[in-house]
Length: 108
Ligand code: 2BA
Image (cartoon, rainbow, N blue to C red):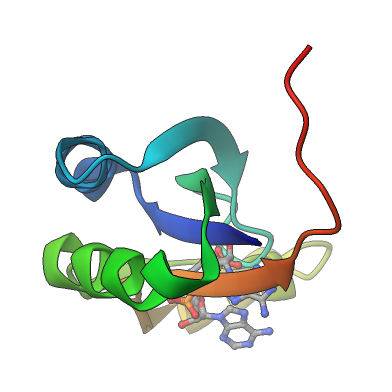
């Protein structure tokens, strides 16, 4: 069994979750914040049989869009105000996906 951690844009999270649950995946949504931009994102936890991981990844990828974000990042924190001029455009997403091996899963 695997645990898929998928970090997705807040604007995509509803459609990604919905597409996954329609395909019989079970999903838990966590409200999270990116450490670089300090902007909210969503982390989906999906427990999956090994054979279904690629199918889950293709659903996540299908509904996650890449966006550009212009903002001062945490890299400018603690610096002089003029450093804020250095706010840059960064590409965010579509989704960042980690797949972890799971020793066991129990429900009590
Ligand atoms: P953030 O950390 O807020 O990063 C937002 C975007 O800023 C990233 O998009 C990337 O384009 C850029 N970025 C991040 N760290 C950077 C750095 N140290 N220097 C320059 N640019 C940087 P994505 O790569 O699509 O990541 C979107 C979100 O996914 C991240 O939000 C973070 O919450 C998560 N994430 C991505 N890679 C991760 C990793 N290796 N470990 C943990 N979380 C990750």
